[in-house]
Amino acid sequence: MNYKTIAQETLDIEAQTLFDASKNIGDEFDRAVEIILNCKGKLIISGVGKSGLIGAKMAATFASTGTPSFFLHPTEALHGDLGMMGKDDVVIAISYSGESEELSSILPHIKRFDIPLIGMTRDENSTLAQYSDLLIKVPVKKEACPLNIAPTSSTTLTLALGDALAVCLMRARDFQKSDFASFHPGGALGKQLFIKVKNLMQKKNLPIINADAKIKDAILQIGEGRLGTVLIADKENRLVALLSDGDVRRALLSDDFSLEDGVLKYATKNPMSIDDEDMLASDALVLIEEKKIQLLVITNKEKNIIGVLHIHTLIEKGIS
Image (tube, rainbow, N blue to C red; front, side):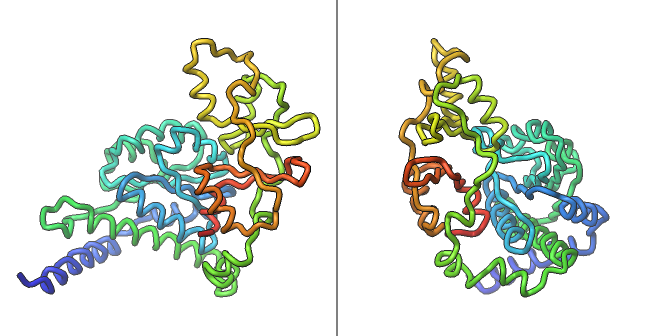
């Protein structure tokens, strides 16, 4: 078997796919760039499986080239992370078939936010296409896979289209080397050595409620806070507990659940927190991953709440 020939055929098929697509770029690409340029919030990328992996890479590329962006997994979105989505955001949803069950399940919820949804799929009649405000087609005649099944040409093209969008946005913003340097101060090593928790933590508009509040009050705060979590404090603003969207969902399964219940009945008491805002962000990420949490609370030495740091912020900023 001549593996060299097989490799060449694979590259030829994928290269032809890219060449064909380049000849058929339509006005929708201009419109997509304009939508993202006018976005006052963040660009959110979502997808499942191979499309999800491509989407994560796209989000990283956008974020590092001047377009605030992060990847949102559809399953996580259904379990609280939709709270990260705001009215000023834009969503790019990726599904080659356009019928991914997990992605399709969050599309109606995305539309509730009344924000632009850009779909990337091959099928203009698919569920994703029908929900999309703008469709970028991913036309593929043949996968490089000899069975014409495994995503190869399609994932290559999707990734390339994402790169094309990023480059268009860089040109539109006149993104220079100096700008790139500001996003990559020494690369990954620079981020690990210089960016601290205080540089990234959210200090304003924190979703804080009193320890004697009712569960109904917490639910309202969770929705307004966009963190998927509410912070519970005593009268001196000292951290007492946390209540997440997941805690609320589990509480709803209790036979004796009542909206008049005290919030502490279902909250996580003595949650993980740090009292050192000068901690390196990379160290904070290690702590978050070790404790398997999404939100880290920052306090002063007296346990007064001064800010929070979400794992999405760390990922968005390229902290590793």
